[in-house]
Amino acid sequence: MKKIMILSTLNLFLLLNASGQVLKPYMKGNYFIGGIIDLNIKTYHFQNDNILLSNKVTSLELSPDFAYFIYNRFSLGLQFNYQFSVEKYLADGSKSKFNTFIITPIIRYYFFQDIFSELGVGYGLTKANNDNYNIIQAKIDIGYSIFLRDKIALEPIISYIRTSERSKEISEYKLNNMDFNLSIGLRTFF
Image 1 (cartoon, rainbow, N blue to C red):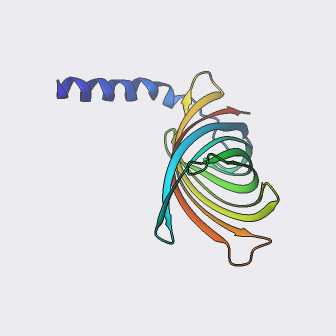
Image 2 (tube, rainbow, N blue to C red; image 1 turned 30 degrees about the vertical axis):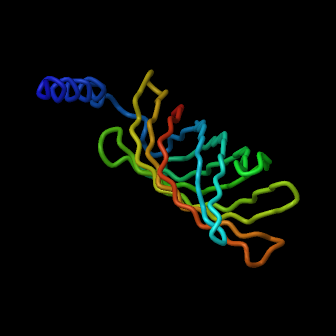
């Protein structure tokens, strides 16, 4: 059974790359537009003065982007992130709403067939109730472009994201966060 699964996976990979011999749109002078939609629900626990607290966060993120290939397989671009989050405090049932905007310059490189890596460091702002926060976010993505048509690709992406948040009003408030994320992107190449 294990051999059958391995052979089936290998056949699927070869089938997806069968069009790999056709001229891909990763050539100098081309560009792409697209984006990612990400829904995330998480519960986290933390301790404050020997009191264990739990919160639930539900967020929806939209990340449109575009890039230009300055060399074959190497592109530079911008990503715009908007995230709307609702945090429910399980101890008392109260809620807070957050709106986050981040602009991230990105570098993408296709290093093997349709497999790519993307790097970006962005700056943004979060507004939560009456508080404002500055955000710096760094990310590393690994993904694969699965071409549905000649110029349209579906892209599963694994991301490592490091976020640093500082309050504008409260000088001692600082939050550092690390996330691993799996998302799906859609890109059109021109």
